[in-house]
Image (tube, rainbow, N blue to C red):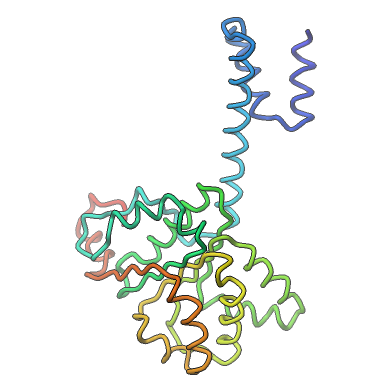
Length: 250
């Protein structure tokens, strides 16, 4: 058997994890310690891990998160009405499988965006396509896409995301075109994909921000009734961390 030729074939077949594990086993002399079935299992496990890690890296890059955040980094000791058990349940991804939404509301600085990003990161870990958008940038961007003819393609990309994070919703009233774009996004995703909406405003104020009762009713109907709600309270996390240098998460 020509091990060099075998390694070359593994690379040609893009079995990079398997090739790496096989090369390591050869160099360390481990291949003589494995039975045939143990060696095969070891190589397959190595290939599985390598593909999973590469896929997760692609998903994280594609998500374009605002923060580098994980659920493990969330500080549950802060007094902000944050249910640890609820977030731990979310980490299992059942809400994504069930096509449910999550609404995160609360005053500025309490860590809403960080928590939403951590949920998105966990979705990537579970293998789900995820994309983060700031609403103040999303709608102007979509308006430009309408002008250059790529709007439909971009909306298709948004629709393909298993988890869509819409951050900073409601910082300003929506113009007519923005209202219709938001409704189109949520209509396409309703019962099909999951959406996380982050807002400083309570849900009861959304009609005022959307600024059109009919469209507001349609938008809220497609989000609120299939959503888990995290209503975060308390002081700005930034202030707490400013005076406590020992804290490194939010």
